Length: 347
Image 1: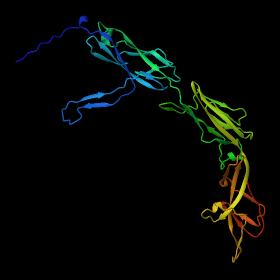
Image 2 (image 1 turned 30 degrees about the vertical axis):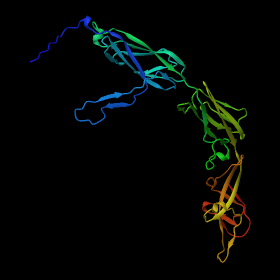
Image 3 (image 1 turned 120 degrees about the vertical axis):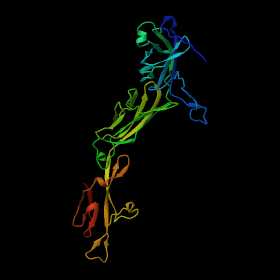
Image 4 (image 1 turned 90 degrees about the horizontal axis):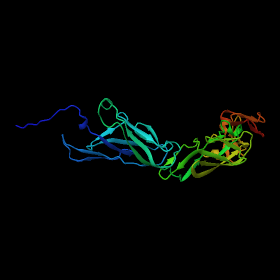
């Protein structure tokens, strides 16, 4: 037979553990998980699981966040895990460099300032009935944490547009069917050594400088709009970003319709018939009543910069100078009635 004796006592202040400090770590994320032993495992086997958590003392980019892990160290070297619920408090000494964004999370704010030094205060004000009534842990403990916030320099600024040619507002080339754009959105990115930050075109730090006399305007959000007074030409937009020594230049050309061209191709269509232009319709021999070849009309829009685009779908109405010679049927097909010369105008 064996025996064991233990004693149950009332709370004695002399027997309570004292807090001798705080243990604080700032981590970026949860790293690899290691389990030992790896194999073989059987029912009832004991394993050891280790979770890596990289400590991070330097932050760079706005929006980067880290998590604070803190514990109270007792005089017997045991620890009490601290959370916001049991009294953990975080305080930033410079909110232009780092903010407490909720719970135990720290975030680099918008347009952060460089900082290298004591940036964070971690404190513990114990909460619960035992601490409020009678003896307990010391009622307050704190520790300062040194962190770096080092916004990096951008390697380059990327400014792009979907189209570098616009047409004047109200111009025929902007109508449905022609569909040339009168405005275009600039997209801005900053390229850093380890990442690219995009969607900066509406950021207040993004600046747009338009060359004098440019036939367009640019909004503070990077929307380029052509003029409505038929002025054509080329202008430059210099895009920069406050706080970064990088720029990008975009050239935008504004044009308008120069002319319309009507032409005809053989009909019915065949392979590559759309590359064959005809201006003569011949009679077909040995037909009664007299039959003629057919052609299909097309409309080509010419811009002032030499660009051209077929806009036949935009023009469904044509006018003939003499309808006794020819008529226009469905799908812009011309049917000859007799010999002669006829002019076609797209309306």
